[in-house]
Amino acid sequence: MKYLVHMDVKLPVDLPASEAAGIKAKEKAYSQELQRSGKWPEIWRVVGEYANYSIFDVGSNDELHDILQNLPLFPYMEISVVPLAKHPSDVKD
Image 1: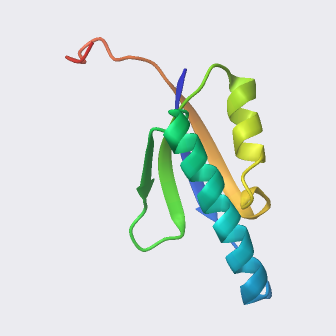
Image 2 (image 1 turned 135 degrees about the horizontal axis):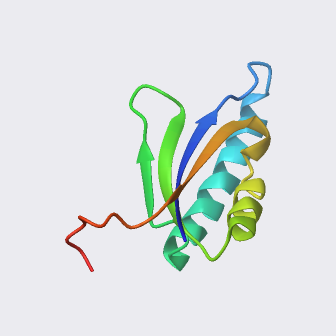
């Protein structure tokens, strides 16, 4: 199942820089692990924002929920999820 996920990060202004850096490092490692596994095949930065649009390819709603909830930045994110279906005009297999 494929999903389009928009993640908008809103770190508190009073979060110590060292703590923010640690969370971001954990986030990067976790997201890259998911990318290598094929569960997070695409991630696109939103220009001028601390946000991204990503494609997830996972087995279920519950699996996506678990992945998102385990993101180290999850407590600081606003997330929207759109389930995707193959378009009948798509020329790819």
